[in-house]
Length: 120
Image (cartoon, rainbow, N blue to C red; front, top):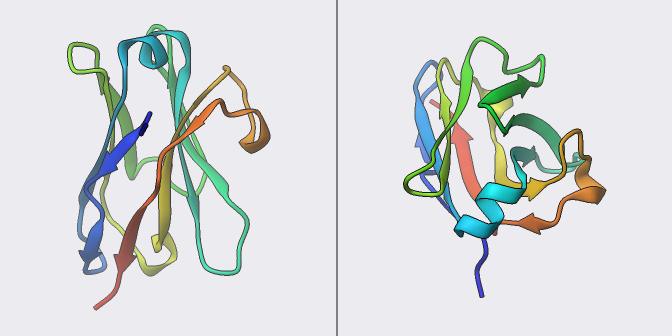
């Protein structure tokens, strides 16, 4: 059973935008902080953004000012709006749910990942 269902990846030119979506259940959505991670080829999975109770957010320095994480509580969905994309943003993006101030190892749930490729 898929607990986190991601969508929205694809190919985009440098400077372009994409929006990723992650739909989940009410139970997962209401009891976990929601994260986006990414993993580029040959690199470790890295934190991108998190949103938790009260709509507080935190971002990796590499995406701050370009990416926005937000959620729709009525749809139990979290989004990642990505603007001003550059080739270094190319990676598989993963939605995850876990404790506040969690790490890769402490996530309770993972999505299947969606590929984002930034190239001209």
